[in-house]
Image (tube, rainbow, N blue to C red):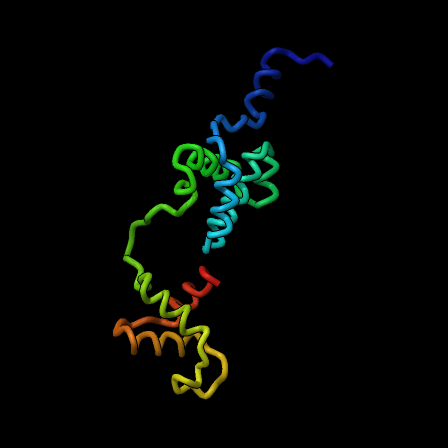
Length: 156
C-alpha cells in the first residue's frame, strides 16, 4: 500500500499532541498535598487527573480513565503549570451570588452532626427541609431545601 505525503500530514495532525507544559519541580508532592486537603469532589478529580499527566501518562489515556474531554484536561494541566493548585479551582461565574455563605455552610456542617431531636424534630435523622428551616431561623436568611442539599453534596 502506498502512502503519500498528504496522508502522513493528516495523520500527524490527528495524532494526540503532547501537553507542552513544563510542570514545576515538586509538582507531585504539591498535588498529593492538595488532594489530601481538597473538599470538593470535582476539584479532587481534576487534581488526580493532572497528577497522572504529570507522572507521564498521556492526556488521551487519562481523559478516558476519568471521563474528561481531552481539551478540559489540557486546560487544567496548563493552568496547573502556570498557576499551581489555584489553577485547578473553579473560576468565579456570573449570575446571582450564592445564598450559602462560608459561615452558614460551617453552621450546616456542625448542625448535620447533631441530633435533630435537640432542635424539636420528631425524627432521628435530618431531612434537607428541616435543616433549611433550622438554619433559616438561626441565620435570619431564607434557605431552601435544595440549597442545603447542594451544599451537603459538595462537602460530604
